[in-house]
Every structure is written in C-alpha cells, then in structure tokens.
Image 1 (cartoon, rainbow, N blue to C red):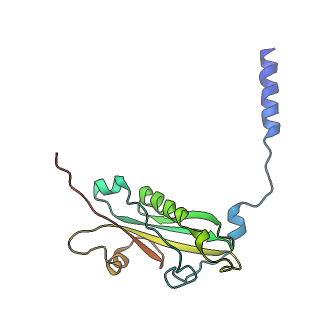
Image 2: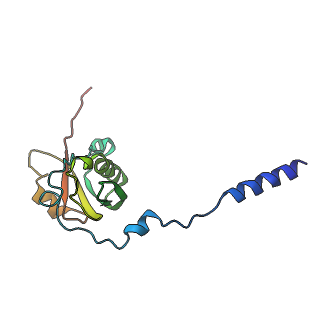
Image 3: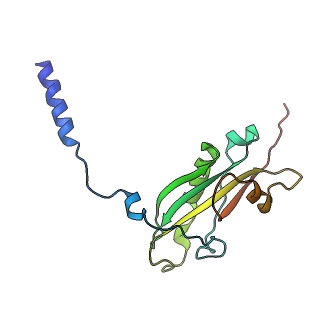
Length: 162
C-alpha cells in the first residue's frame, strides 16, 4: 500500500510538470543590435544614473575591477534580459546589475522610444588615491571589460585603527 501511494504521488507530480512553448525572454530580443549611443549624449541623457555601491568585499581587499551589463529597454521603460557580459569578479557584477535596476527609467518622457533598444553599460570600480587614478581616461586605458558607455564607481579605502 505504501509503495502504491508513493507511485501515485510520483505520477501526479510528473503529470503536473509540463513544458511551455512560450518564447524565452532572450528569444524576443536575441537579434536586437546593441545601441552604440552613450547615455550621456543620447536618448537617455536625462536619466539619473546613480553609480553602484562599491562592494564591501572588494573595498576591504583593496580590489578594483569592472563589469559590463547588457540590457533591453522597451518603449514602456521596462527592463528585460539584464545580463553580465564581462566582469572581473562576481561582486562587481552584482553591484552593477543592482544599480541599473534602480535607475528611474519611468521618469523619462513618454514616447522617447518606439521600439526596444539593447544597451550596454560598463562600470569601472576604482579606489581613489591622491594620484587621481580614477580619472575616466585612465580607467579606459586599463579596463578589462568592453563597452563605450562607461560609468565610474569610485571608492575610498578607509583605515580603521583599533
């Protein structure tokens, strides 16, 4: 009787699992080309792009790096397919994605887009020193990530003496 009950539960569970034929979000935008226009001078110049948090794990370790995030913005300013293209580590990727998701897309004027656009933003995480090493020109020269639309995330290392 116990085996019959287990068999019945297994059959019910398996019959409830069905695959759907709906296209995945990636399929809808797979052939969409990346818009090369940087945010600062393009359609999204009025978007308030707050920089990401500097990952605590990397700040403590003195780490610097980058992350390039690709995403699709629809005419109603919904974000889709937010993916990491390049990242020097997972902490930078995590904070870069979180920043894009917090941007106030809905504050942009209605009708700005007539079709979805695919964008890429490169975040450069740099710990500033007195030498001014987080200058955008220097960041571009030593980056490990691709992308023309660059947003610096500058951190400061603070020594705490106990």
